[in-house]
Length: 148
Image (cartoon, rainbow, N blue to C red; front, side):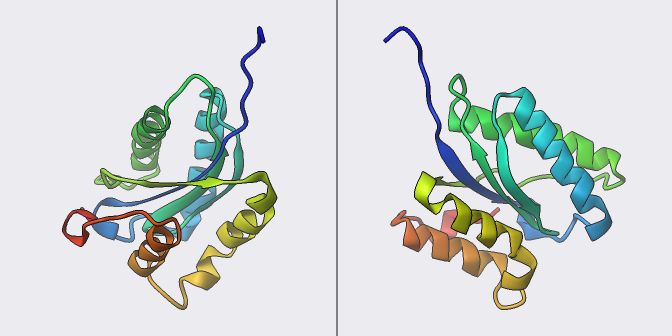
């Protein structure tokens, strides 16, 4: 087979440093648009994104030529600088992240989940949500090292 092809969907989740509410609603759409633009330039296509005041849910494709960690590093560095330009001078993302694979058959339900972030977080906080994902995907973790 002479051609290398792939379509890997990822649900990526990470928070602001110490989960501080730094991203105001009036900045959200510009920050989301910036994610879409930068990731597209990297060969990753955004299926859905929602940025909460203290974390992001991003459903995207994994570029064939980048590792997951490279993709996230590039988007965090670039978006952090851009969000600072939006008038949030001390903005920083957390060091870690969560990445969850999404099958084609679950794509629409994950999109809906991401679209409804503001409703989900009326019921539970980011830390509870994140622990739920880790349990659902059977990812072992040590609570001591989960947060920064």
